[in-house]
Amino acid sequence: MSHFTDKVAVVTGAGSGIGRALALELVRRGAKVAISDIDSVGLAETTKLALALGGDDKVDSLNVAEREAFLGYSDAVATHFGKVNLIFNNAGIAFTGDVEESEFKDIDRVMDVDFWGVVNGTKAFLPHLIASGDGHVVNVSSIFGIFSMPSQSAYNAAKFAVRGFTESLRQEMLINKRPVKVTCVHPGGIKTNIARNGTAAVGRDNDDLAKAFDKIARTSPEQAANVILQGVEKGKPRVLIGMDAVMLDAFVRLVGARYQRVFALLGHRVAKL
Ligand SMILES: NC(=O)c1ccc[n+]([C@@H]2O[C@H](COP(=O)([O-])OP(=O)(O)OC[C@H]3O[C@@H](n4cnc5c(N)ncnc54)[C@H](O)[C@@H]3O)[C@@H](O)[C@H]2O)c1
Image (cartoon, rainbow, N blue to C red; front, side, top):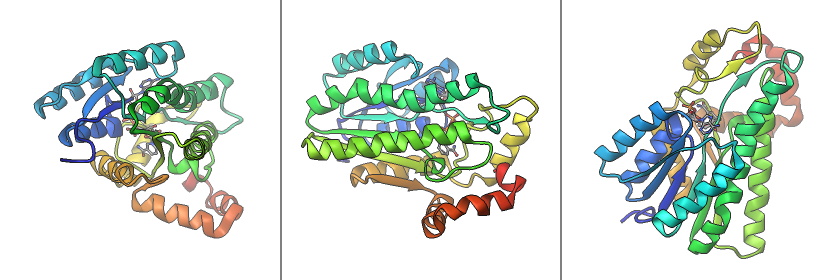
């Protein structure tokens, strides 16, 4: 019997990458899983793979940026399974562009999905997690929620915001003695479609960016899912994924705000990462 046996777990953005790997690993470990995505093709593939593992997932189309839909979805999941133990707020998008190049709509879109999507999921499911008596909120930030990079202001803003929101929630759950653990996840480079699915400011070639990302991403989504579930099992407040994330986190803590100067000096090489 695993930590996840018979627990009900919700995974957003389960049609690809880390979300798919999480959903499949949760099925392997005996959880009942509710998966969702905006991408119906990717979601159908995850459903097929989960079925092959013996999973009987609840599958729904969900845009995490749509608050009312998320609220209705949380009630539907709770009714379907009778309880909800875990929410993995995983869905996310990437955007590359300097502040001067970015349009308001680009920044809004990233915040809507990467920040408000996490807030919507947390708020929608929190009452159900508390009611379960054994709940866990797992919010996916990024190593870019620990330090900033040129050309990533919107993504950095959303991922720093996820970290702030999540760390505050964890303390509130402790103070108010709620039966809900809270974990913030900070992946380094994971070999997924995030860059290929991403968008870029006018004049930037997203294909080139995706190729550069493919070269530096070292960790597989399956490894990432295992590290996340290990951290969840241990009730860790913060989960760093990959040696790159561990080293960069240590570097930034060592040099403090001076990391910005170092990254700026590295210039366009860093901007391309
Ligand atoms: N891959 C990395 O290197 C990396 C690093 C740090 C953080 N992350 C974070 O990990 C999470 C998962 O990303 P991934 O790498 O697996 O990327 P991915 O592109 O492979 O998967 C993301 C999934 O989210 C879905 N999605 C996008 N917008 C959505 C919306 N509005 N509503 C519902 N679903 C939506 C996509 O359709 C896709 O299936 C994201 O939050 C991402 O920011 C990834």
